[in-house]
Length: 160
Picture (cartoon, rainbow, N blue to C red):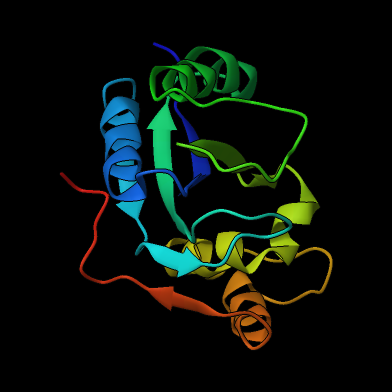
């Protein structure tokens, strides 16, 4: 039997996000188990134009390695939901799925400086230690939210 891995994924969209976020979660659930889901948060786009983003995090359990999760699951879902990549890394998108934590390893510390990632992550993994500051992710989220407009969208859910 393959070893199960736990990943914390960040999902974001600002093109039909009310449709694309739950659809991405449904597609993820077809390939593994969604264990926990954060609230959906609305924030303004960072570095570019377009509509406000909706973001959420979920914990995900599957037998995929990190590379397989990225190539076989995430890239497949992004393509299925018509994610278009361009030179403009801030361009509007139907879906963006990033691996934030894999088996308790933080994949890229830059995500821990982004309120739109940290606020939802703090809901489902508040005790994760931020190696850059020594804070818990819950403490980092509180600090970052003081400097950016964000609001939870309680009327929305990733659950279909």
